[in-house]
Image (cartoon, rainbow over all chains, first blue to last red; front, side, top):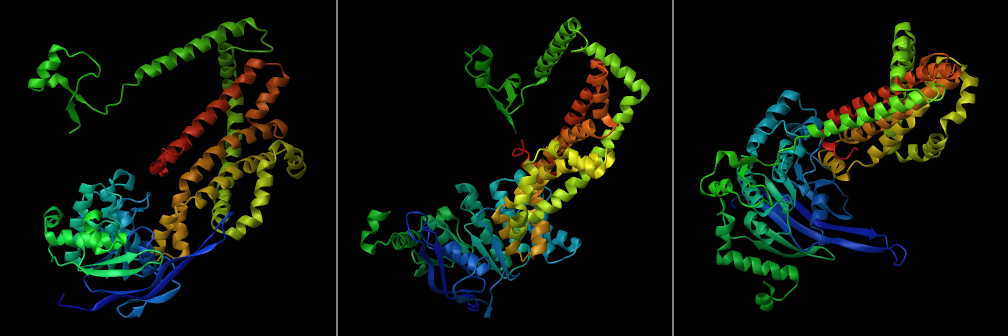
Length: 272
Length: 287
């Protein structure tokens, strides 16, 4: 990337939960994240990947300000942030659309909370619905939409507040394989159009490689960075099936898989 | 397109079907997911109604009219009561009390329920009282209510309100407690303040529960109204029942009972429609 301005910085973030032991066990401390640091450059897509329990979703929620951290600093453009603000938009794992609102009203939600006028909201919502390919579905209610369409609305809702950074929490994990690939592609198109900085949580290796500039592989208990992998493919990217045929893709995938499984490189063949 | 060529399942292949294999015969194209016609169910229901009413008519005529009446006699009594205006006056008296007290108690129940559901302090300071009052049979407090309000309309309003408020309040509280935490997260993530979370997330999310509470409250309100009229007021449908009961005029006594039945059924259906209209996404959960 020619422009290496740091957009989002995570500095020494730690998080510990107290787990209630119940009748047969004492309470114990679960170190979810320990002194985690990394940077995301402007316009970059960075994925967080790791086995379940490595704290990737916890980290994303800390960056958004949905939960508190125990130590460390989150910086956006160099300024420390602690609470949700319009510089970060969150795309939830389950679409979490408000079921009593139409698709359009869901997209307008963040703007409505900011007190933006109805006319401006509606224009903005329409252009975003068109951006995510649902220009005709504005008056539908969430229960009338498919899972993939709901996730498109989820993304449009986050984009509506015009955040510089998009935080995406496994947004496509609940979708079927075809829809997932379509939406990954759409996400890349929308990112290319809007130039958002994206921090993307996933447990899908192919997805991480396909969408990212860099992939941060996390280890569990406590969550920490094992390795940051540069993805050598440029944008606009070839389609995923085509990319899968690239030997570099397979090499990165094998390497990531071994990192996640805690296997030394020599045992690679057994792991796949 | 929702059309596919299909054959009746389990049937042996017939010549038409074989033709359809080669080139699709227009007659062989059926809509899938088409609702079975339900009209025959209504016919069955109608037969059931006619059978039971006829049986009642025939058997009812053999019983001493002091103990039991029968449909045609009740219909005649109803005509008399409509002509004299007695039924309409009673109905208006009952309904006006019911609507007034019901609306008042529902509004109060919703507000208190929202506060109890959202704020722990309000909850722990009132839950013992709510439980105690909810479980106390209303009939037990009627002598006290008569002491307070006398035998007039205010006693009726009080009893109906007490009957209505608790189902509404308790269901509203449950609605607030059952707001999915993910939806609260959405509010928080988009910088909603406490008031916005309350008005734009919690209240609409609790609405289907509130409607269920209103439907349950309505049933109890009608019971409360009749009970109140038995003991207190000299007007209303309940008073008419008592009057004809005392006169051993069983056929006339049945008339306000039927009116109450229709009132209950139609008001419930109305609220049910409102539930569907207000919260279409919840229609499968409210039964």
